[in-house]
Length: 291
Ligand SMILES: C[S@@+](CC[C@H](N)C(=O)[O-])C[C@H]1O[C@@H](n2cnc3c(N)ncnc32)[C@H](O)[C@@H]1O
Picture (cartoon, rainbow, N blue to C red):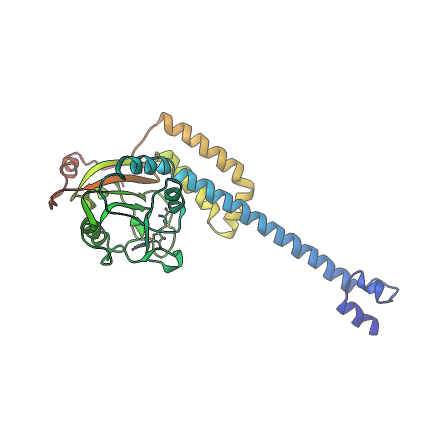
């Protein structure tokens, strides 16, 4: 009995040190259970690590061209005007890109945990004076805004006439940052939303087949535990498929799908309240694609 107690407290090799001549099965069980637990934890770590890598890879594919276009626009337009540069949606990689470009931007975010310079909902930028901003950067935020028309009205108010909004928003992308993920915009929806601005650029970040690849990658990277575990085996296939879909997309180029849009709008010298010509022009040509 005394022997059992020693083993209970010091299983495995400790039982020998405890002076007992037999190797208790209790200690062996605990040892193998500990081994299994260790192996299980290593496996979980591996699953998590592959999932994280897939998320990073899918993000790079989804945000394709974004960095280069943002840089291009900043170089082209940041010298316009003397006002503030604001970066709405703080804490992501965009803040780092702006730092690298030497842009001193005031960061604004609804979430204080992102440590922005100004905690504010972009639907209400009352902390900023009218016409005080020469450039507003708003990358991957509009889909999270509950009343986008209010946000756009605020952008119009705080921008100087001739001031520029540089932004992006996803189109074919899974729900993220739930539950605060409310909308997906088509290029036509964006034209409607920014009808009071002058359109300078509206581009698809990539094509339909790239979007399919990103949807697949994210399905396995941020899906259920089973899907993330499957990603361990499937990741080489998913990565190969991504490049195959990219090649297909180059041949069968299609603009009716993309992971998202990049846009540059300029505030008009005099604000007009109208629908853009190109939206009306789309109407008679609208086709039923079964959507
Ligand atoms: C997907 S992250 C994008 C972050 C960064 N722009 C980037 O691309 O790396 C969206 C950010 O927008 C912020 N956000 C969401 N709704 C907002 C709102 N109504 N006003 C201001 N910021 C908002 C979120 O807190 C989050 O930091």
